[in-house]
Image (cartoon, rainbow, N blue to C red; front, side, top):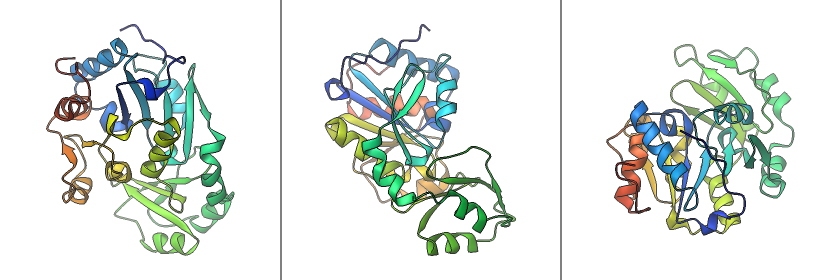
Length: 259
């Protein structure tokens, strides 16, 4: 597949449809055939499709990812919602106006969080130097849940997802609020945006009021949490296949079937 860069001359509010998708297990999930069908369909329709990555991954990972066959996004909501950025020529460029409240809420707390959780049972610090969060690998067997109480007492939110990640975030910041902030800033009509995810760190965007899909391989904890939300489509197909399934179910674009 010949990769095309996003079209900088067209704002996303000119696109018929905008996909706001998690990466691992969602946009990067499903079979090779399903992924290539989704990616090829997006690239063939870049004039009418916008793409936002909404992910726990850091900017460096996203830049490397899009150097291959994965379509480049127009925008990125990264670091579990603590980064809101343009994506240009392989580089994630934070949008200061959209990150100001996030930065203020975090207030340079990284060192304090790391000190408070140093050596805590079941948590292993991830080596990436995140700007407005601290993230750990999570061992549910060894984990001592007093970490959550301690972080909340310090004024932070805690998110455990996929039964293996533990994120400390600024209060009130996650994928959903940051995605809504970006969509509003871009002046994209909400009914033209599809939010797609598969783990608990996607919950806030799936319940944000946008059209949403939990792909077929979603973790059970997420499925349980969205059970009462009838507006969220539960796909049968996994990953990329589930996204295409939801685009057709919501009638968001005229050409997804068979991609």
